[in-house]
Length: 146
Ligand SMILES: *[C@@H]1O[C@H](CO)[C@@H](O)[C@H](O)[C@H]1NC(C)=O
Ligand SMILES: *[C@@H]1O[C@H](CO)[C@@H](O)[C@H](O)[C@H]1NC(C)=O
Ligand SMILES: *[C@@H]1O[C@H](CO)[C@@H](O)[C@H](O)[C@H]1NC(C)=O
Image 1: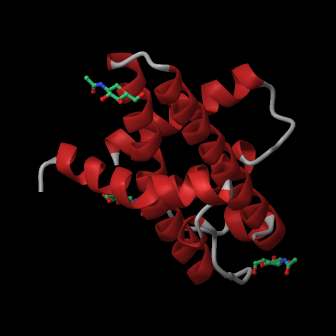
Image 2: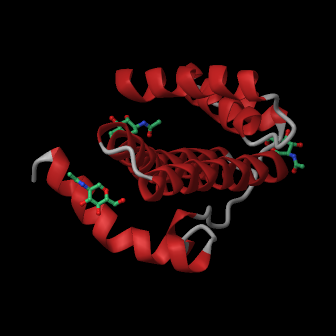
């Protein structure tokens, strides 16, 4: 399926859900994990696939607004980015409460250590906006190169 069609499909299936509930859809929330390296890797893999959806969703809303500047599309774009914030916070909080620094240090792959620390930082609600943007773009880059 072409990328555009995939986005359209998400748009059709997810917008009503998001707009009606005002909360993250359940399948975008983190599951249950233990403070173990196997669960840390499972967490990263779950985060990875979920983030891909949330990112695409926000990128789509942003692109949609850029090409069609209506108030409605502006609202959708803002909502999409708020969802993205909620997503970051939910997963960041989960990483912070479950995985200890010792455990993260013990992960063999440097990429995994960097990523899980990044998720913790992204989830800090009190992160200043420019810091958040910085970490956000690092992550964008990270997702592109992986
Ligand atoms: C994230 O997903 C991409 C493709 O979906 C994959 O290539 C990459 O290895 C994954 N990274 C992690 C840390 O799971
Ligand atoms: C622009 O967005 C509005 C919704 O605000 C929609 O009704 C309209 O069809 C869109 N126009 C185009 C050209 O996509
Ligand atoms: C988590 O696991 C690590 C590595 O096994 C251990 O050093 C640490 O004490 C554990 N922390 C908690 C809170 O269970």
